[in-house]
Each structure stands twice: as structure tokens, then as C-alpha cells.
Image 1: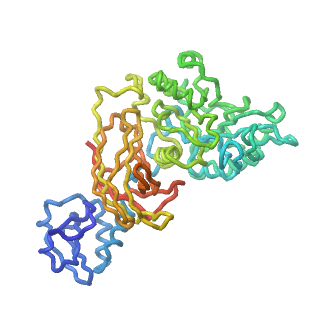
Image 2: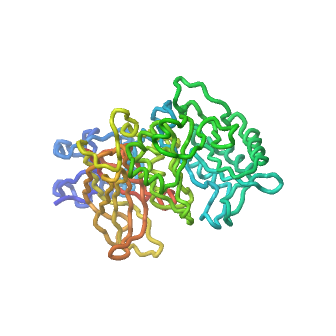
Image 3: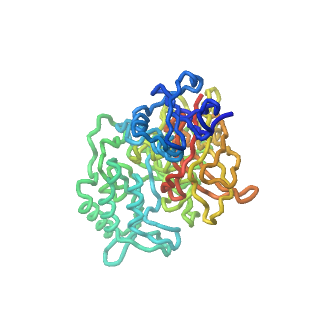
Length: 505
């Protein structure tokens, strides 16, 4: 018979009850410290030789932390307190990726860049409100490409809104002032101003005047000295600089041009030009000519934006466009759901700076890559995730904890897409235990995102969202760790979390 223990592999093990002094004892296994410490519900304390536990031996990277904990003489520590201590210190996201660690000296076309569509809107595309806070929030979330739709306004003051709709209006000069205040709060890397220009020549001159006077030296107005030619500058070359994407006299890089064909771009397009297209056209090209699309985005910037029919400000799945290397997949940041979960997961990598280096499979000049084709001849990576238990899950608004299950999703190229779920544990939101092992076979893991989603079943095939967490496969830490759950709007649900074991083969 085994004593009760909240399993954390690296730090807890099961131990036969008949070797304990009473049945209320529970055990902390600390291999690095070379002994077992037994906590009891009273003040009793004892040590047992590690030799008996050789089978359960596991590495413990937190020796100093646990030594300090033991030194504090928490003889009567409660299990919940100790578990929460361990939870707060060991997230499934690789902590080395919480700061900028990637090479930031490559051309801009080599990066995925966090991008916003109709950034000014806080609601739908027809009657939604425009607000300066929308720009502030996008920039604080690490967005590095924001959209400004410019129209003639009264009294020679250009305005920003969604044309031919009932959306409210902002003054262009106020938008630029807001951008100047918040552009580099969380990231020092370049901000691209995507100006959709519908203004008369006279008001374009007013716009140019505001850009120069408000942004000052932050506005890039002349080409940068570069060590190489024929390429866009790197993020480091343009640190703390805003780049206008319209108003011809101010455009140095990222001039928007119409996409005609991949052959035309290869022969005629300048490296500094940016092609912008709606999702439907991009999707069609990706399916028909995936390898050509990948080669195109190795050199040129490609911006893809939601279809005009998305009047409720819904978003496409950005993964299908990242798969072909599109750098600027613009999303409606105000709209919650899976696409923004994926976007937030992708760009929490590399310190959340808004620039993530594209994987080598998208940049190779030696091997053609088509994400719509099966990757034959490639040895797949086997990802094993054991979902052990949850902790402090949020109780539904109904107040009745009906049950919960965890859905683990793989988002990558078409052949890697997969979703698997645990069983449902009923009436336990404090510490539901699933103990479910899930395996995935992934052919291009470097493009994948992993999404953990906790849901509450409401019917035979229906369920409600409880919490989620998304991260890149390349930032996934192996071993035992905690998954911190986030709300639908991306906010923390702490202390709600999942305890998992991750292994790659």
C-alpha cells in the first residue's frame, strides 16, 4: 500500500506506509540533498536513508531552493503550500526564452513579426469604437506592426477610422502621439507603421508634417548603412525606429506593392518592397504553390490580413500563413479566441520582443519546403505529454463544478495538426487528477505550437472554455513542470495550473 503523495516526479515519490510512523505522514524526495524528509501533520520530523529510494531517483535542479526551505524548519508544512511553492518556480516555458536570445542581426524578412490589423478598433468593423488605448495595448503586448487607416478630416486634420462605416474617428496626430509614447515600452525593436492612405495630397502633407514633428529622430527617413546589399536591414540596425509604410517621401523600407506572381516578384520586386494580400488569396497561393511562397518570403516581406467579410473582427488561423514564412500576419487584437491565443503563444518567445526568428526549414536555399505536402523521408519527433493533475481551476460562473478535461492541441503544418484529450474528472476543480498520457508524432516540430486547453463538458459533444496556455514547441521544457493557465483575454488565472510531464523522442 502506498502513502498519499502529490506526484511531482523530480521531488516527490511514493513510499510504503508500513515504513512510516503513522498514516498521516507524507514524503518529499530530494535526491541532491541525499536524504528523505518526512513531513507529518504534527511537528514530528524524521530522516530515512536515500538508499531505499534508489529506484525513484531523479535529478533535482532546485537544490539550493529546497535546502533553504528545509532550513526554515517547516515541520508542519501543509501539502498545498509546498506544492504551490514548487509550482511557482518551474514553468513549462523555457525560462531562457523569456529574454531575447535569438540572433537579431539578420534581415527583417527572416523573422515572424507581431502584427495588428485595424489597430484602432476595439470592436467590430461596422459600428465598433475606435480608441487610442487600442494602439497602446497592442504595443504593450509586443506588436511591431500597427495599422493606421487615414482619411481626410475637417479643418485639414487627417482622421483615422474604418472608411464607409459607422466606426468612430480619431485624429491622426493623436494616434501618432500615442505611438510615440508607447512604441518602445516593452521592446526596443522597430515598429512598422502600416498607413492605409485615403487622404488628399494636401492632407498627406499634414500627415507627413505630424510624423516628422512628433516622432522626430525615431522616424527612419533615410537608408541605413548595411554590411550587405540586396537585403532588408536587421532589427538591430533599426532599433527604436518607426518605419512608415506609405507617404512616398518618407518611405525608406517596406513600400507596399501589389502582388502579381512569384515569378514577377523574383524578377522585378525590390528587396525593400512589401506585398500585402487578403487571407483568401494567400491561402489559395499557399495551397497551390507552397514551396514558391516559402522562397518568396525568404527575401521579401509578406503581409496577410483578414478578409473583408469578417465584419465581426474575427480572425483567420495565423499558423497556416506562418507555415509559408509570411512575416506580417495581421490579426484583430481586440478579438479573443484561438487565433490570438496562437499569436500570443508564438510571440512570447524571444523575450516577447515582437520578433521571432523563422526556423531553418523556412530559410534553407538547399532544400525546397512545401508545408502542404507530407514530409516523407523526415524522421518524426515523438512528443509524449502526461497530464497528471490540475490545481485551483476557476469555478464556472454557474458556481457548479460539473467537471473538466484537458485538450492538448498541436498547431503546425497540415500533416502535424492533431488534438487529443484526457478523460473528464467530475466535481473537482481544486485538484482534478487525470493521469493521462498523450503521444504525438510531429514531422516539423520547429514550426509547431502546443496549446493546453482546459474545458468543462456541457453536453455529449459540447464544452465550455475554462483556461488555456500556448507556447512554441521549441520553448517547451521537458520533464516535470507546471502549465500556468490563462483566461480568454490572455490574462493570468494564477494560481490555476496544470501539472505535466513532457518527453521528446
